[in-house]
Image (cartoon, rainbow, N blue to C red):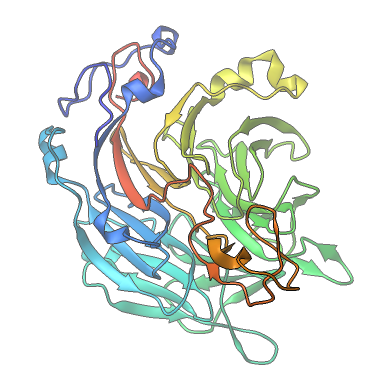
Length: 436
């Protein structure tokens, strides 16, 4: 199952850079992108993929799924030799298992495959401490434990490493705990986000992002529809943006640290805020998010293009530079996507761009619930039951109804739990050509 597109096939070498003025909207993104390979068999059945993230050095891909397992897939070796056709399905290189539902996961930012000691990632799950897993030998290196005022273990809902990897930020209800990576255990710094007397940012900290240019500045998003900007030198928020459309599920800083992109649960918008003027919403980008699950989005290394999926299986790309230059952006009008196409048959939960190569990894899946229906013979006979059948008739058989599972699933919905690897190579006048 490959979606072949027009354009030049990659030869593994960087082509000459082209000016932004020569980049034209000649081809739709669906014709420029092509599925190289993916992983399907590891996510069969109801094993929904929650997200995927490339390693900082780009050597492997980390995924999280509904079976509470985290899997690492190596970058296909054929891509190092510019072979992009006929790639086999990706095989699991490392697999670890958590004790309960995984809330969040992230790579150690200084990870390099040339240094095995740096190859690790952090995971937080329900009713468990934060675990630091070895990405080479799949063992738990250490744990970072948080305890409440009753000395009970509490699990974080989100986590993020600092730029240097020396600190690990963990989000809880009404607070953030900062652990030193070199000191596992329960020793940490408590940063309250809300206090009864002083107020602040109330609710569960659902996502964390660290500024790429100011390591001591970080942003917190909560399920209580607020975003706060914090600094290491103070215990309280420098500013808080409230009354957002919905609970915040994902935050991404632009490479220059001036803009903050925010994604929400059950909201069809990605908002962009100017960190230098926090009260100003620069623009909003539309996408389809009809569930409460976390729908990731990502930026390219130059920060120009934003790629995001949706619960309808559509992968959309936006040219943020063009959106900022358009006058409609200041008038509150929603911009059209630079280009989009159907990438999956199910919700796209993960979207991660490779740090150095023109590659994109996407993951898909969501929970599908079957609606119970009455059996066809439930209306036979006479009686005084008074129940209503699936066709609207009143059943008077006076007997217990027989419910059938799996017959009422929404028409047209297809279950697709998988990870796909896409090539972004195209013609010199195509999209993303300035990145090759």
